[in-house]
Image (cartoon, rainbow, N blue to C red; front, side):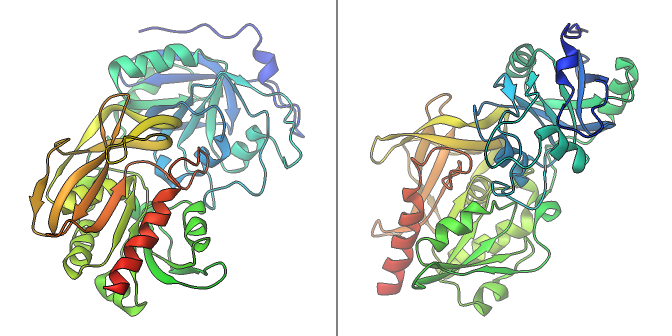
Length: 397
């Protein structure tokens, strides 16, 4: 068991923008393999548990924390200084913070941005999110890279590592977890097209980010965001020209109802576009397997190659599972021919799939990353245009 020493400058992690201006409180982080770190409580007081993953984005922490894909995950920020732009009212990607906990090295003492309404620490505290600051996040990241993502606990109330470790070991694993129903909307919502309406899309909310339907609206799409429990009858009722599966948390092998819905849509020839979790479910609907990555891809700086154009895109990722499919080889399915369209240049993980008919025409496609660019680069925004082209071709046919 390894312990990192408390920072000699821990007082700087007190949030001076807080009305209480409380004295910094000690906190500990314990991984399920027994390694522990000592730091300073950040955000809410208490304890929390989840799967520890590291996130490599230099910016965009507000979008990351409000991404439903991070449900039940404790996010470790690899960027050393976090919170300097505070928290605003515009950049949330959902109605709440979804991470189970937040781990950072240096917390900004005073946020400085013209849009900031409160500090990061205050936002975490308001929503009951327990975090820890002042630890060696580089050492923690290296440990997760070597040992893999694992269960973790953070506490500013239970400071005995052995006792916290026992609680960590009682937490559920991410493998086998069906979490889409936890993060989905309760009732359908409609996001109107901006300008002239061209298409109607049924977007199944498995953890959708608010920027995604906005990107569709920019292209004349009226998006009907449906709960994860949506049925084929729901798609027919809205007269959908296409179906979209969003990002989301959990193990794709456990999402049996959503996979069955997608298979019905593919059987009917409805154009399909999926991202992240939607890519994994697309693979399983086509008869491919999925598996858990050692530590996953979490960040806004992941290089991906489009195997069709050989163009390299810098992309935003958040996934701990991946599709098991042969690269450079077509696979025949009952719905058509599927091939790998994109791969990650860091580790050759499958990052996209394309389904074509007997004439080689595109029927459906998906990518493992986040083309809506919130937060993240805009290299992959063309995928929304490809979805429009796919629906246009089907309508013309």
